[in-house]
Amino acid sequence: MSRVSGSLPDRSGASGPHPKRPLEQVARVPHPNLPPSAPSPAPRSPAVTHPALLRWPVLVLAVGVWESAARAHGSVYFPPPDRIARHIHDLWFDGPVRHLFLSAAAVDDILPSLGRMTAGFALAAVAGVVLGVAVGRSRRVYALCNPVLQFARAVPPPALVPVFVVVFAFGTPMQIASIAFSAVWPVLINTAAGVRNTDPLRLDVAEVLRLNTAERLWFLVLPSALPRIFAGLRLSLSLSLILMVFSELLPGTANGIGFTLTEAQTRSDLLTVWAALVLLGVLGHLLNTGLLAVEKRLTGKGRAV
Image (cartoon, rainbow, N blue to C red; front, side, top):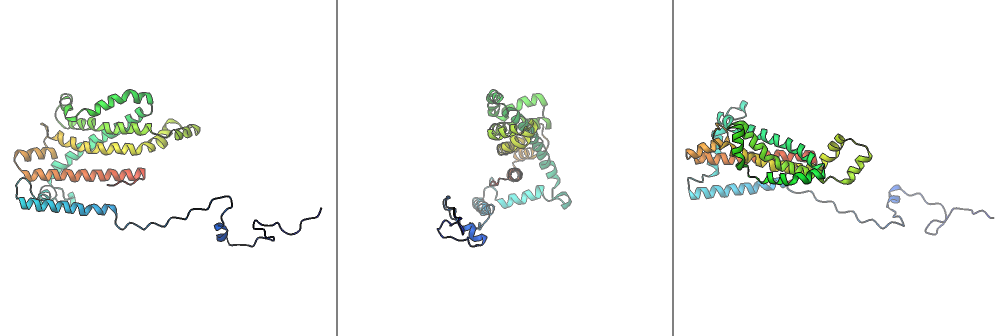
């Protein structure tokens, strides 16, 4: 047999050693068995304006229309926004700097209301997440409890006031209990639904890795259910603010924003009524913005504020 001299021919048919090519050229040579790669998309141009900044012109336009309409109409029942803003400043935010500009009226009206709402919302959030995880982990328990949960969620919160008055009597405990009991259902139902929607493949992986129950809940179930949990928390937060005002409209309340509304209505002080309504809107927006920031930090998903 004769020995084959020289080098083997390459795919193009030419013999001889392959010439050395730079790594960049080698990387660009397509493989004969692979389809040609699609062209890389053109880089996106950065957004010119942040979406959050687009809301300010709409807000300014709405306030301007309100101001113009109120001044043109001249009705005592619909004061212009500038009078309402000055009244809010004089009533609640003309205090010293060391008190964060809060006046004595703000300490008597705003802080007790926020304390009741925070306590009721915290109780509803903790109880809703714990019970929702317990219900959602078992398909049979969820099937048994779901009709009861839907029934309790559909009961109007004001209809439960006589029950709480009998159990707790008038006062702060009754107000916190009514807020917590009525605001717990959105968190509980959404948490249970989020736990049930956990990817079964991930559960199988956790079984292979021999994770215990606590590790599965902390590293797998809760992160998977977080979007649904925060959806329930947002509903519960808005409901807590509404129930806080309603509970302070009842007899036995001596302070709070709802109490201020009742007193202003009794005195026919419509400017204070409008000031309390605007303050409630601002508080609701700030609380919702803070909750959305926490959700973005934990889930990594941005939502429109």
